[in-house]
Structures are given as structure tokens and as C-alpha cells.
Length: 297
View 1 (cartoon, rainbow, N blue to C red):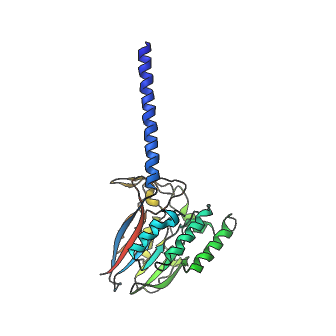
View 2: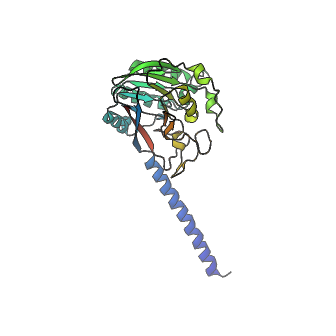
């Protein structure tokens, strides 16, 4: 092999390396930009149990993230929506990062000025029940401060609330951490929902806050007219025309990844979430704030 051939091959290899580095830099810049953006996704929920139209905002999986200083961009968007209620189906913080508690509290402090806030547990909040967790005392303080602000924190329970001019039942479900095990979806016993949550007034429209969407069919079968979930972060990476690639529980192509799923005459709405943790990746999977328009049928 002559010197000229060697030089050409070396130049070719260098060009490939430079191209890879350029693409890597472009990817990092794009991801940083993408992770600083969110969109608003609007859904309609109709039911003969509703007498008047009403609106709600759903904030899922914020994980202590901030869109602008003191979450100004997110809070302005929620305020502009003029919701009559705000639902948070879990994971407002990251359990192991204490600084996310402060950011979550600051966000709650402003949200409660906009509309009543109902906040149920996700796996990050449930994790902090364990007294052995280093941040357990801080979490107890966080809960007290949130309640002092007027935030309605719900565990596994039901209560009758006002949704605009409607009276509806709102329930929250806190799943045991076994249901969040990585590598698979543990089955839910057929009687689980009835054992943990009793339907209070079946004539009222029933809303359920349940962080994990894997059990969407159980939620609908139990009697939830609409269930709001998060957890999957939209599947991290979405393939156009196919859907999400992988869930935070490391299951491939999760069925209930993001969007509105009709199950009989009931529906489950899964948010792509607003924050990230551990895997800070969003490919074709922009973060979202949900705007829900409830309409009589």
C-alpha cells in the first residue's frame, strides 16, 4: 500500500470521526433545547353525568423541574388556561434530590392561587413513606407545608368535590411500590380496586388520579369515568406512527404510553409528563401540560 492510499484512508477516517462528533454535539444541543420546552395538549371528556361544562389542568411528573425562573412559563400557561381545578397525579418531586422539594413547594404556592389543587401520590412520593429513606423527615415537612398552602393531598381515598357547577367524585389511588418494579408489569388482582377503593355515589361523575397507567383497564372496570395518569414520561423515545419505545419500568412498547384511551364508555388519559429524572431524554416526545374540557353529553 503506497503512502497516498494510507493518507486517503486516514483522511476518510478523520472525516467520519468529525462527522460523528458534530452529530453528537448537535444531538446534545437539540436535547437541551427540547428539555426546556413543553406543549399544551387539550382533551374533551363528555358524560351525561355532567350538567355544565368545566375545565381542569393536569400536571404530571414535574419532578421539581422549572420552566424559567420560578417556573414562570409553566405557571403563566396554567393561569391563561383559567382552569377550575388542578389535578396532580403524582411525582411532583424526585425522591432522592432534596432541592426538588423546594421547587415543588414554590410551584404549589403559585398554583393554589389559580385554582384548587388536588395532589395524589406517585412512586416518588410513595417511596418516601419509608422511615429508612434519608429524605423521609424532609418529605414529612414537605407534606405539612403543602397542606398549609391549601393543597389537597390525597392518598387512597375518595371525596366529593366541585368541578365548576358540577358535583363529582374524585378518587386517588396510591399503588404499592411492588407495582413499579422494573423489568415487567406485575399483574393486578381482579378484586384489588374494590378492596382499596369503594365507589361512593355511582350517579356522580367519577374521576380517578392513578399514577401508573399500566392498569388502565382495571381503573375503567372499577368505575372511573376518566382516569388521569403519568409515570411513563411518554415512553422517553417515541417512534412516529408507532408510539413509545420504552417505559421507565424498562418495558418495551408500553401500551398505555401517552394520550387518550377509550375503554368502553370510559377513558384513561396519560400525560407525557413535564419533567425527567435519571434518563434525561425526550426524542419526538415533548413534555406536556394537559388541558381538560369537561362537557355534558
